[in-house]
Image 1 (cartoon, helix red, strand yellow):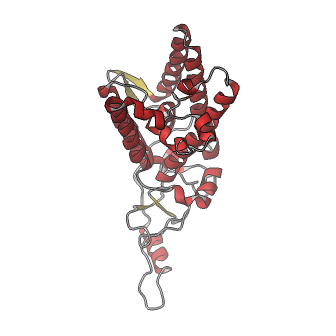
Image 2 (image 1 turned 180 degrees about the vertical axis):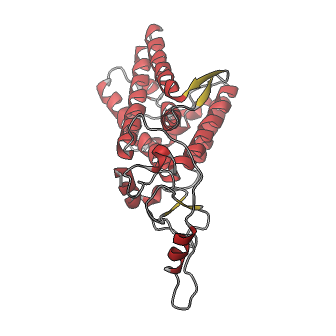
Image 3 (image 1 turned 90 degrees about the vertical axis):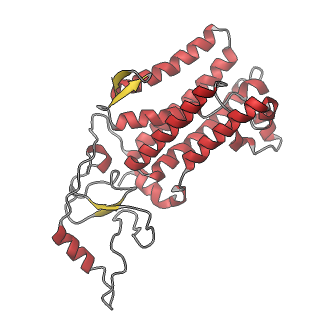
Amino acid sequence: MSLMDKLERKLGFLRYPRLMLYLVIAYAAGFVINMIFPSALNYLVFSPDLILRGQVWRLITFVMVPNTDQFFLALITCFIYFSISRALEQIIGRWRVNFFLVSGILIEIIFGFLYYFIFNSLAGYFLVSYLNPYYLYATLFVVFALIYPDARFLFMFIIPIRGKWMVFITLGMYAIDVVAAFMRGLSGYAWVLVFMIAAAVINLLVFLLLSGYRPGKRSGRRSNVVNMKSYAKSAASRNQGNGAPAYRHKCALCGRTDKTNPELDFRYCSKCQGAYEYCSDHLYTHIHVGSGQTGSADGT
């Protein structure tokens, strides 16, 4: 069991549905506010000075700050980030995606304060207010590419690139943003980008470390072969005294059943040694019993 599995048992409340949808809606709302009433963003942006004076809502509302004023680009951004988050939920589970987002926002807040205290004379209200979760959301794509390094992605919607190369391309684009800001003489803004990127990368590394990620593993989905004899024995053991089953399916990792959580799908793992059944959140993330490998690494 990885550290992430242990955290999931203790922080089960993070398994909140549609978190990324709400973040995307907040981003879209911030874009609309910026178009209609730009000065209203002054009450939403990240400002450590004002937060320390009691305006604590800025610790949350800064996720509404858009990184662009172009409608088409903002629309594409919302669509891509929501699609990637939904795809990751199917692969690694809703809880892990939510953990990635929440921990990333917390780390970004910490780095925002670090920037403010380090560059106190330089980091005025207008510089620190550029803080937004753009790079955090972008690293969701990096997570997806690391899970499927051999998958082909369309770079700029045209050029097919393998996932493992897209990781380097994404990080390279981050570096280009910083260098371009320095070359334009916007050193204060460039350092904001450095802190935002550093927060996103550190969050990514922490997530991979806790998940027990090891490079070089292949990922993929394979059909699950259900051992019907084992299933019959397992189902019989669930029967109550009156012969009526308390439930039909139960996750061997989190203990949720089709009765307590009817919205979940349950499948048996063909690689575990025995009749082990898992919910859709853990089917591709559990440790194979008897193999020591994770379901997300080589498929179940």
